[in-house]
Image 1 (cartoon, rainbow, N blue to C red):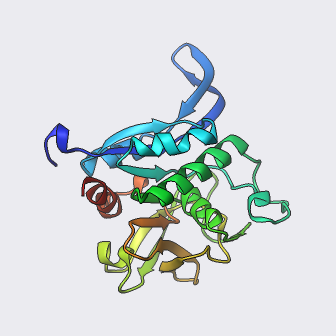
Image 2: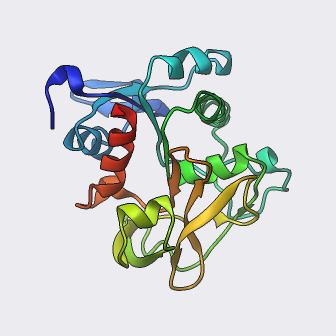
Image 3: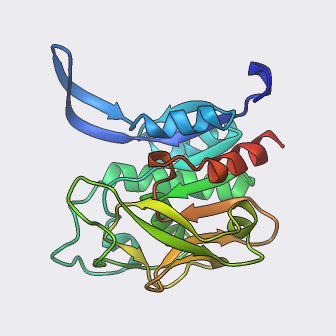
Length: 231
């Protein structure tokens, strides 16, 4: 994996919760499921948590990073892509939306390698002018339980070069890409035709996956990000 000095710094966006409980404490907290930093570490990176902050600080934050992961989480506010809220859309997370959109735009502007996971893929699409399907059946099996389904890579894409075969992935989402953002191309599909990965062409390392690699055992996507960050 390389010496500590060789390990690129990978920022990972986090939840901002009004109350969390551990030990004898119940306090506001910045949270990140352990699978994210463990996946970064297993791929040879140093993980740094990025809790919501002033969007104007995103450029400065990204300038300190070698790579960026925008993590999964709550539904993106439909107002962010010019849609009316539908009944099954979850409650808004305005601080995360604003911060993570600013992080994505800063990463795109600076050429910082970027991986969006689930919500992160959806935000990448929205940041580039795309829209979302607000409810999709069949990609969440049970509330609070990750499911699994197959995704098929598109040959010749960045994702296809990392994972060239059909693979089974951990999944938990009820929204998906509708209209693609500017410059994005699909790089994997589910069996029902849902776009499961998107990426930006032009030689940049910008990838979004709709599933949760941090909940599985396949580290190839994160290894690709860390490799690009090291380079």
